[in-house]
Amino acid sequence: MKLFMVVCLLVSLILSSSFLEMSMAGSAFCDSKCAVRCSKAGVKDRCLEYCGICCEKCHCVPSGTFGHKDECPCYRDMKNSKGNPKCP
Image (cartoon, rainbow, N blue to C red; front, side, top):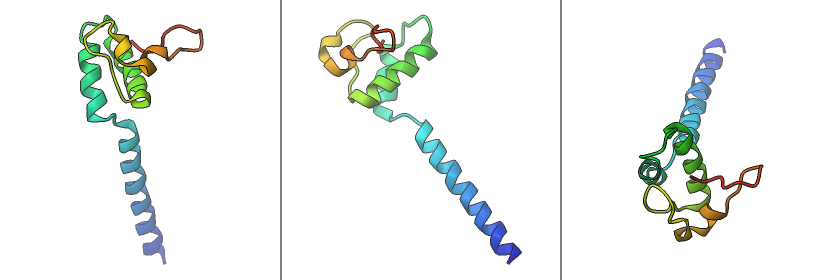
């Protein structure tokens, strides 16, 4: 009985860690598009974070490192809590 409990605990730990990795990982599409978009950003980690959030929600990222937001209206129209553009 004790061995069964240990095995169940190990299996649940392994499964929960694999789900955590999947939820933290971005998609290859968004990662590559945001890497281009944020390549010239002053604060790259923040740019990549917000770009990733916007990309996952909108399924698109404007081309280039700045501007061109008309290519992706969802990305362009997302606002933060202060009413400013959320997406870089």
